[in-house]
Length: 203
Image 1 (tube, one colour):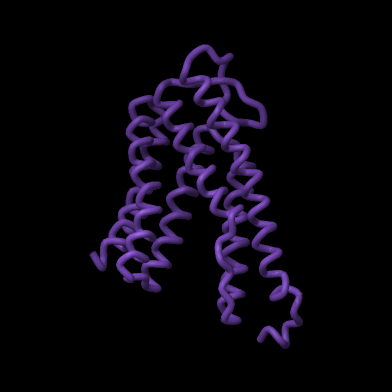
Image 2 (cartoon, rainbow, N blue to C red):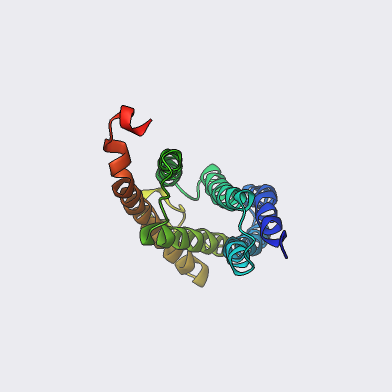
């Protein structure tokens, strides 16, 4: 049980490769398999932390693996969706930029012995992003293809369940992007004291 959280994180990290390959195949069956893989990976993202806290096996390696695997897993899926023109690049740029921003702020805070906890906007952003990606994968697996503004999922007019599911997933993706921006503001506000300090006092 002690190593289970790390095993789950490693599993999510290694699952990134087949997930990306399945998305790039751009075939309905591949999307359905990718949906199952993505949902499984998303579940482990919740389980590894819960298990580590419940059995008091939280470690620095575990924290590193959890954060790294989560970001690699989600970012790789989004980039793959950009490659096949399902998700526009601007959305992924916003999301990935926020991750770099948060990583930098947390590193700065850690150097000063300060911990910046994840706020509600960040947690909601994560949930919305996972929900949007999972919905897009499932809809594409069911052969959904509709026209949508702002570069999302080009196709014809909606005429099936899969099309309407894809529209709903696209809306959630736009909400996830908005929440990404709001969570970045939340982190900036939390770390503003560190950023505003002169370099001499922060050293």
